[in-house]
Image (cartoon, rainbow, N blue to C red):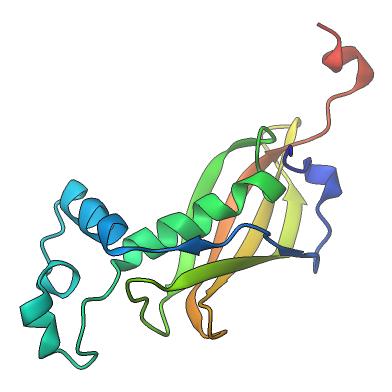
Length: 156
């Protein structure tokens, strides 16, 4: 399924992303060690037993990465020039091994690019919820989205 062109985004538009993701212990350990994050709250079960949550937490950067990736098919697949940045990222509730996250996206704002006539900027708000409906990640990001090619531009 291709992403949407700049013109197809409407402020206030909401997208429910159909693919969920269960985050496993293996995902968490691999991601944490791959990124050299040796925080014992992610890796050490004995250490984490004495934490306020009593168990290991899924690395919040893994949660954010999944949130961003899980939105691609319905938003930016093949129609973006690039991600321009993330802002206002919060993790109001923890993610534990075995939690399944689902993502919703809202188009917060859009405007034409001042420097690239073939593109426009779209600000998204992505929200990840676990299987209990609790928000586990809430962020805004801006993408530089391509405009729909004209008939002449679409010719090979």
